[in-house]
Image 1 (cartoon, rainbow, N blue to C red):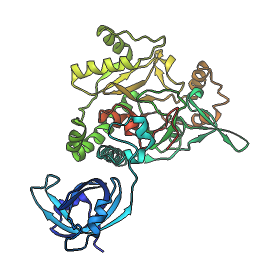
Image 2: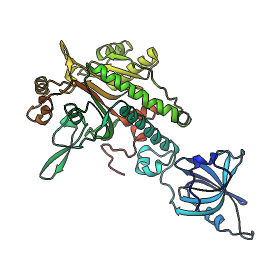
Image 3: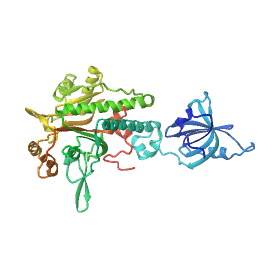
Image 4: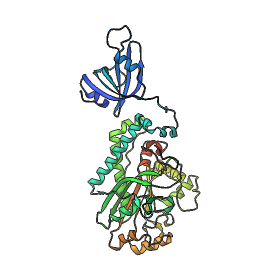
Length: 439
């Protein structure tokens, strides 16, 4: 049997025998000739068959098979590859010599104008769209570039447990599960465990893995299960070291995406991928709020945090003033940061932390961590936490740990904003939210 050729490789293949396989996008069943547009994971191509009808000389088996084909059916075809500039679809076509229907399809329950919820109900069919295929090839390239950068810079990849005995951040956002005779929690982040790598002497670590948040939000950027991209490094002087690492990592990822998929992204989504310059703009949160107020928007929060509209406003300002899609908002108030964030020397009301905003949406939080155990205990109590319950975590710091810091970043948010998609539902393989556990 002739080896299968990917459709994307047909242009470089010589004319002659070829075998292709994929699913049927369209069938044009004309009186004298039949056309199939076949798609596989790499692209689409036109197949042609001179029709043999009743009374015509020849075997009508292929003609009859094509006439009975339903859209979406998977077929394998052997035939003759011909190069013809008149063919609009790639300047080539395959004359069918043999056709096997390996998976017949029912009529599709979704259409191009189906709602996102309807499409998610039938996600395996929705993923057949070329745009969806591109989304996940972009994600693959992006993550490969991040991993390459990390490995080239001496990082160690770790895989932390997703079942935990206690909370890593907020109990309010924990999923509780039965665990034999007791209870366990799904990890909100690998925070405590990636910090554990610092007294272990690993120095620089990263992880790409699921995280879980019991957050009943129905926004375009929230999910109850998502992929968290995390890194932690030893021997930092401040959160500036973490930001520098973070921006260099993102430049590597976006450079790879632009080089490999830039033209495809522009054709599919009308988006030009921009590789950001470094350093990214840095604006202290208090200053950012003043800038936003000068633009006519007052953040309507009772705490010291920024809200989504404030993030959009400061991103618009940075785009106008610096021509940049990213901005670090720095120096968040300790009142809205976790107990393990290092506080400013001389001003305990501020932390050595940041949020990274990309195209108007927060994609990451990073910080220098507090590594002094006596200070950690005090800060935990201030947050209403019992140091006794944090015993396993605080033990990390009782046996020596270097100054360290890191970040956690939502992968789907990055891809959503990179491709200018309206929701992370469009860029998540199988989305999980407050009212979605299937498929």
